[in-house]
Length: 80
Image (tube, rainbow, N blue to C red; front, side):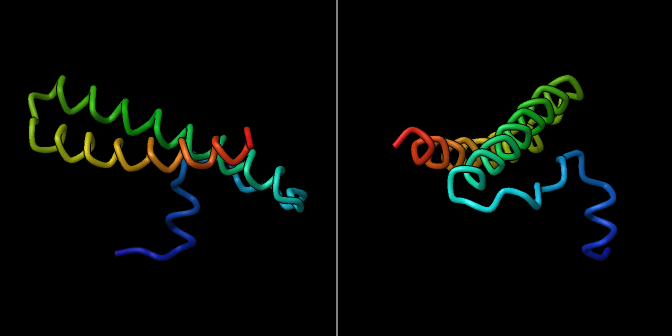
């Protein structure tokens, strides 16, 4: 178990900028963090494969699909 503070201390994601006050700035900050999350998830897939752990590899692959879909929608808003 853990606390929100413990999770925040352990994250590799940069802190959300407090000056992102308009919609575009928020979307850009979200896209950057979701892209970093997507990259770390793909790294976890590769690492699970190296460790010959197909169950974890499959779990990370499913997470990656959802993260990539979310990132797609965020990026679509940035372009629109």
